[in-house]
Image (cartoon, rainbow over all chains, first blue to last red; front, side):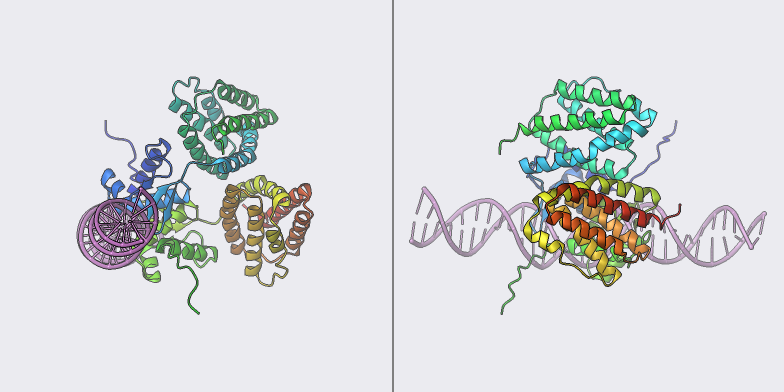
Length: 211
Length: 211
DNA sequence: AGATCAAATATCCTATAGGATATTTGGAAC
DNA sequence: GTTCCAAATATCCTATAGGATATTTGATCT
């Protein structure tokens, strides 16, 4: 059997982008850490040019910052003010997305929504949570909403990982409430359940920050 | 008198980024047009590397798209579906921003808000409109809101320029209503006025698209 | 001991050259 | 006249070399 996969090289830059983003999200590269173009080039075995392109894209997405003649560094961990701003933004977008998803979500996505039952490890729960919110944002049928939330969830993921936030039964139950409302195609309930979920989630994460 | 300006070179990449973004917004580079790295390098008199970094950032912001081994091209003009998505998003964010701005905006920004009275040319009105919405988003005190709206307004600007949308007295009056509500620190009125402004603006722009 | 300054280092920034690919152009066949 | 195919071109992608700058280290002075 020949290889039937379509080869879409897509360029080294995007490959590097995915790799470095994964390293940042897994804290293999911690927040507020210098990222050397030269080191990355040697480690990944590619030239400096695709590294520079990848870092430029990461900078545009707010994961690293550049200072002239001083190189790149990962963004520092969110402080209290940034966490507040992020959840204020999520409260504007995600409840509306849940309402629209309840009204218009495709059946295939609705099934995928409730497929993940078990959440054994911390990483598995984080991935499941990311996928859960991604599916709902996608179900809202608005690419701007989906893209914005994807960007924000990366930062939430990093923040949670910094504090080894344990898996809470509460979050699972809150997810279940949202899933039930979407399956019932009840927009009002889905919006309210999502709002409640985000507010509770905000409360749980806020406890990790004192200042 | 010596030069008291702090020299912040900030890199050629950012300089190129601003320049190309300006060219795209002014339609000097029309939508759906190929952008050659080599041509830009020759035209701007710099090497290819900063051009590549600038284009990577523009791609992350959705102003150009890249295809492997086929180069960059400006994004095509928004179609009806994209316009709908964009204004759905604005309706989620900007009314809330107007409410918060009415409650918390700094006095200096409030004065700047009502400074621009005249709107002689099409370009001048476009700039004034951009600055108006930028000030309100900034007044909301949330960087995520401000950054998101700045990105979206670029696309609105391009869309409007494509159709040589004339200056409407309506838009000016709607702006005045928002300004009055903010000066009165009336959050409810500011939010409602902003919502009305965006809905009317959407109606005016939608007429340019048939499909 | 602490602070200040200069040299050394590591890193970034820019420019140029060569290999690989998509696009375009021209011609031949139907 | 239209369609198909092959060669030529323009462009991108990658790699490497040299100049410029920020950071660090170490010694000297108070």
